[in-house]
Length: 174
Image 1 (tube, one colour):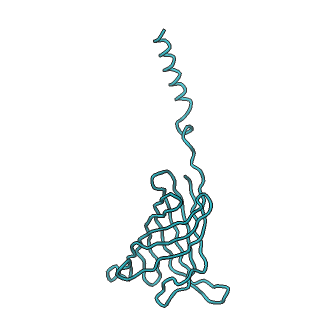
Image 2 (cartoon, helix red, strand yellow; image 1 turned 180 degrees about the vertical axis):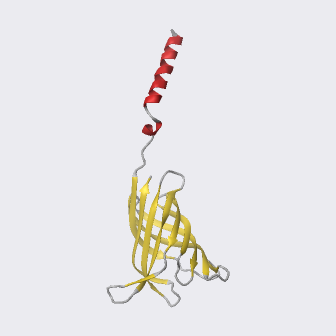
Image 3 (cartoon, rainbow, N blue to C red; image 1 turned 135 degrees about the horizontal axis):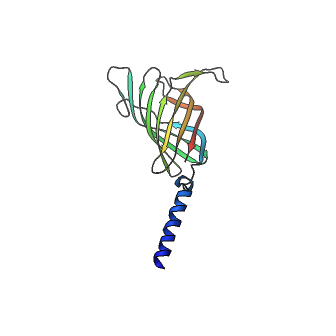
């Protein structure tokens, strides 16, 4: 009797396993969306967190931070700590870093577009810095894309004095 019950149980488990695929048992990824503003970009200081990359006209930027506020699936302040290799004249280059917000950590890989001048309602053109890229959640499932831009008033060296307008958007699945 015990053998028959055991055999029946085994056959039932195997049949159910064959009928219900494992993917159906797993949680499906959920859409993720958070949007907000950039409130600050840390200054660079030659010799501290910005160094010439040889004689190439490019600069290595290390340990720079962008701060801001997000709303949506995460509603909290954020800090994007990054390093980049950029062309001095246009600020274009690649960016790698970590975004921390709401108890989550995301690895980010992005591209900094060349600075562009944009008109403002005051009739003065100001520089706009645009960053696009990909994020993946550290220590858990999730990945997607991000887009960020900031229009700012520069000082005589091109550093950010004041942010006039900005946007930071993260979209994906987790």
